[in-house]
Image 1: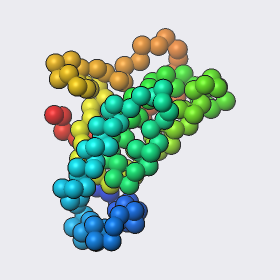
Image 2: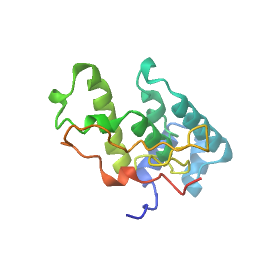
Image 3: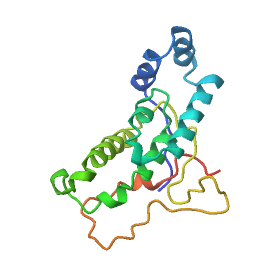
Image 4: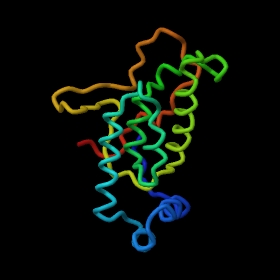
Length: 165
């Protein structure tokens, strides 16, 4: 399955513009691209996402940030271990301790499938994540559980956010 070309729609761009200063918003809406300063903010969010400690809570502030990139959201999705949730067809089957993450990941999955992010500039490959060590790769998509898959992860979310590094 080829990786789709990312193109945010006008509603996404407008939502982001509404959250920015008027002069920055005007530049974004005029050319449909982020300025270097906004790209720097995106990179900071991405680094924060990759270092997020899930024991400290869900990274909702990162994915709700208007400049959150598709690659950042995809990394957060896979680091939330959605593979574990495949064994459950509905929320009421999920253990109580896992329900907040289950809800969060289902909402994030919908946004990812709808391309509800301002851009897809930052790379993340869930099948070959190098993390801080480029000599090693980790496959977040691997299902090592023997539990039956009742709710498969959409195939499109197994694809890299953009061309590999």
